[in-house]
Length: 96
Image (tube, rainbow, N blue to C red; front, side):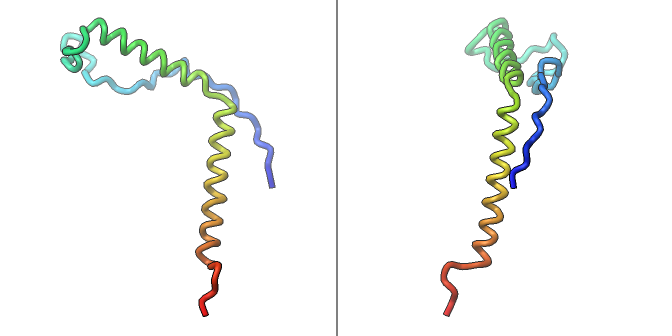
C-alpha cells in the first residue's frame, strides 16, 4: 500500500538566523582567548565566516530528495519494528 507523497515546497534556509550561540557574549570588547595559540583574531573570524558559508551552502542544498530519503528511512524503521514485534510473539520453534 504505497501512497504517493506530495512534494515538499522548496525551502531555502538563507533567510534565517538560527546559527549556534557563540562562546563569547555579544560584548565585542571582551574577546575570547580560545584558539589564540593557533590563530589570530582575524584568522579566527575568517575561519568562522568560512564555516558559516559551508553551513549555509549545506542548508540551501537540502530538497525533495532529502525529504524522500528521510521518509524512506522512517518507513523502514516502522516495518522493522512491526516485524520485530511479530517475531517476539511467534517463535520459529514452538516449545514442546
